Image 1 (tube, chains in turn purple, red):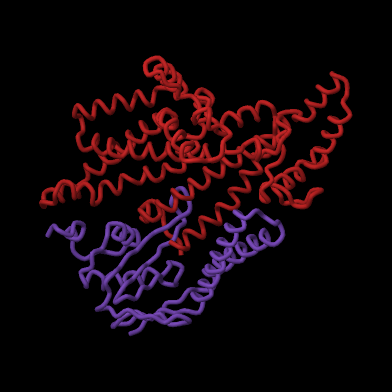
Image 2 (cartoon, chains in turn purple, green):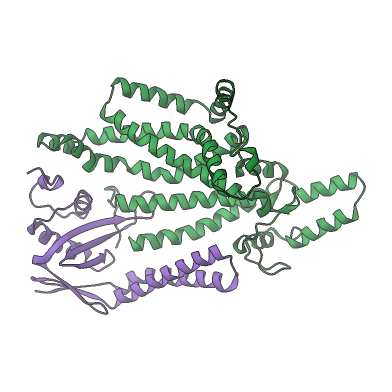
Length: 172
Length: 342
């Protein structure tokens, strides 16, 4: 059975808003204020950054992820797939811009046969997606780092086995 | 990571705006201004028509008789003045009324030299603190640990300016060298050359040690404490029991984890180093922005003080940004008390 994951429009609204404000602010400063060259370079860099951020939000809007028994497929403007038997990298990171570390978001990175998939926790049913891919990662006996383990634990995802042999690669 | 970077940049923009507003408010807080005081002086000496005309020109140029909002907008370059947009954003740092010169000309090389000293000091702190901190933690309660702890406490307890004066005295009395200034006198005001750079390098050693001592001492203490915490955790004991080599068991995880405060401190070190370097610069006669800032604040030379404060604030904000990004790269772990949002 294939399960479909998409980025809901309401979660992408914040991304669109950030991209919009970033582009408007940097463009207005570039066009109206006649800044010195150092600030021009900085503003152009920021403008490109916000443009890319906006384009990425659009791509995410049009993308869906299909997870089945054989692998994970990204379908949309960019098409990629990782077959489960090829899954060679699994990492779950957590980021927050707040000092207390709250109100952040997670980021799942999957690698397999030269293909990389980056998935943000803004995608619908992210926990389920992580649960599915982590079970494959454990099944493939991938080296799960301590950061990922801790983040999995925070999501309430159980780790098969005690896994202590994974912390230090040389110790069996 | 890219999302984090963009979010962090978006936070930096309003932060800098708020800092610029606060800076402007602070430099406006004392009653009166430099021009008013100067005007009173001129009146008491009998008016000089040229000086009075110049003061009137500055008032018009910098909107000093207009609302604070307009003054701020013109200073930042967000609002056009008589010459169009001409403020900090356009590279015009305003006029130093005390020197009767543009701030840029008065500051000259000092900004670069300040940056060099502060950057070198932070590098010094890290280079010295890291090996000592690791040694102290891995050889806890050894003679070496006690020795470094004693030196660390001395470094924490000794005021920088006092250390500067002591070194100034002993370097002169016992070694016959003058460590005041940041270069030999013959290079002052000269164009940049290899000899000038070497002279700066020679003169920089003592200021860097003086400014960096307390930071190094506190960094050693923090690294030692963090590494000791990590070394006492169960996974280290398990790793050792399973035969993982001692060095590998140390480097693989405990050192990485104890590096967090090292990186997190980049942002907070910068303001400490900068504020510490102001007094030291006065004592050691260093041509940095510290003495200029102090003088500008005392004289109510508002554009000079404002521009220098903005530069220091910018350094701090950039430092915090770098440290946050590095921390996110090094340790993207969730804090178990917190929660991720979708």
